[in-house]
Image (cartoon, rainbow, N blue to C red; front, side, top):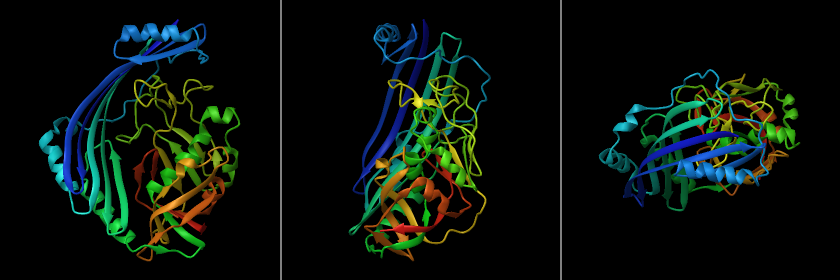
Length: 383
């Protein structure tokens, strides 16, 4: 029998604002253990607070499990990456109140500022014994102005000033209050990093998962047409939002080139794949690991100043079909010649859509899995 023990402790400190006033300042800690065992090729998984009982439960489940795995991770050289901002240790209730007062402005319907300290540990019967501490800082702002609304957010590993994101949400809400319908047609559009991550996370990234490729649920062979786009999954960026020295299965992190100037070079996989790329992650100690990206860096040869219809975000990207690449999304907080746009939609296929890239901006921002500047697309049909 092989075994794997994953422990996690999460400390969350946060301040919540509603209707321009501080509503709650709180602190909470969650901890637990997730155990997997391989017995006769079958995998049993259980989670809880008592390691011994969880181990027994996992072994019991393995007897009836249909999940299979040949082996857990083996020790290998780990490259240490910076994932923790020590300043978060000093944040107390007074600091949270100060952050809350920055968020508590007129026309802010709701907002939240939080810091998380995550300690994770993984051991297994093959000799893996790893620990890492990570910090997460997050701000979310929803603003309302007359009949207009907007939201803005930012997640990072290091402390940052939340005020610019409050100002941006208020600015977009004010523009949205006077939004007008746009005549249907073909336009040059600028996607913000938020919109890019929303779209690619639900259409393109799953196409690089080994399991989807193996089962015929991927069309990445069509990326050969994208002669200038490069995608690199890089978990080794110091203070990258999803950077790590090892994944949640104990596999060493490594940079994976997915696409190089339009040519497919790699895939992402956890231990269930032919060979793990160090992309097995969990949503917490009580979840089973699955394939996910870390920091996907988007590169493109042509750079310049973005001009066109600015699109801040989308609604409905989660309904996209990653197998076919088809999507249909509603535009949110779009701006054309200084005026807001309402009731507009974009639909298409991600593989065709990416061929419309004209150039990219120069300043990168990480949102979710994606580290990218604004991207300009030409000849995009808006309804």
